[in-house]
Image (cartoon, rainbow, N blue to C red; front, side, top):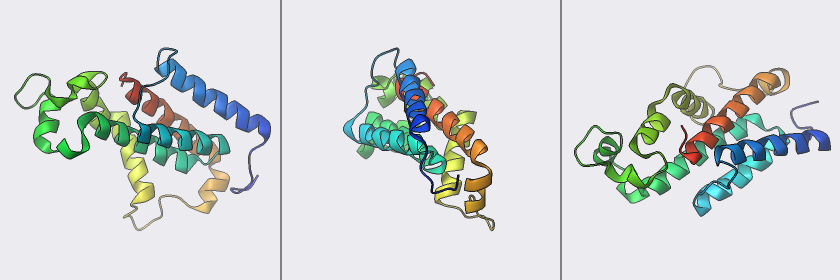
Length: 167
């Protein structure tokens, strides 16, 4: 299989089943409650995941987290003072993350937890590569697909927990 070959119907369906089951489990067998933009990103992520577009899946998983955090925090109110309050550094009781699933500790984990920092750094390396070596090559897509799939599944796991407030 080359990087541009489509998956078999069996692969496509297995990947959709895994993706849907993972989000369903994160939501406690109920749909995750997200805004319209995050829902659209999840829809696109579901499609690229089923297609085996692992790098795109990882990028979109982090994008869904960013979209949900921005929605929960209020995009116009996203500044250091509010972030400090949300993660328990500043004054106030609970900060503006009080309405977010999981509250301030959840936001702290999504922003600074080891696995979430890994995901954000990996996404940034793909999108904003500033290293002298490429973050991804066509050769990687062909010969390192198993690692890329593993990373994409990890990204979806992290995203599902973040959107469910279980990070």
